[in-house]
Length: 430
Image (tube, rainbow, N blue to C red; front, side):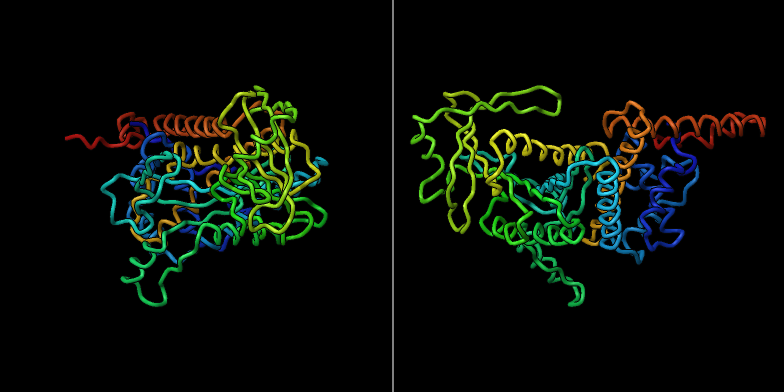
């Protein structure tokens, strides 16, 4: 198999330098090599496979030590990325005169591992609400992380992320850790709250913030927390049918509204198709929530027996605006797909919690770079539609560099065999 990378991309190097991270030269080189290989490699994304993509690279034990024992902080790198992300989206919004509204999406994702994986500290059996049904709960082995994503106009990035561990898992891990390295359990609500507080420091004065999440996060605590952040902060989310509005289950409210006309709302999807929903709107006080909210009862057709329920704390918005804005939450699911399917988020083989956190940081840095490059290329008028197009462009650039370098070396040395030996990955088959 042909080696795919001979030297780092200048675009990636400039991006990494713009983050102003306090890294030594060897640490910066390891990040460059890892990020380049994550983008270019189409095979497994473990460290050995990634470093085999380089024509010249140190032994894989060096990059393993970079994640395991090297004195750099994934948390500090995450702070640098957050600063860069918010500065970039606000600059683009002010330059292009975009509306002063930030859409924030909160969600979690399970990165599955093999059932036999038991030695990795961030991996444990977790309830899989996507695979579970009403009658049966499904548990999957993997690592869970929570993301906070920001969007201004058409520009969006992951602002922050946190690894999540169950309280039982934290207690088990702490039995084998010294006191100064023990982990602290934090619920998903607490992790989401931390990221929102960090985000608040970056919001310019006069901007509106709409925090969006699905029904699993629509707790009274989170709704009240968002409401306390100020008049310009609003929640926009889905809720379950068993929630009560003014003492009545929302699943029963639509039965009492048979006399009321539907509002037809056309919602545009990411593929530019439109779907019409039949909506009824009610207002009231949700259980344990002291302020008035707006609840939408949405059906795919008038006889739909399984309507969806949505909540918004901004009472000035119409049903059309609420449903179309809630569609923006889908972008966080697209990010999860790229992280897991194209960038190998779940391919780590690192033992300690801290090393796994560093791996997640580097993979998120890779996605941020791809999104940043997509927006820059678009601004120059080049027809790239998605992050997948940027990955393809990046791979083509490296393929050209490798081919040209091999040709130059063959001409200079006059030996084709030595060039082939240098640029081909040795076979591991006996």
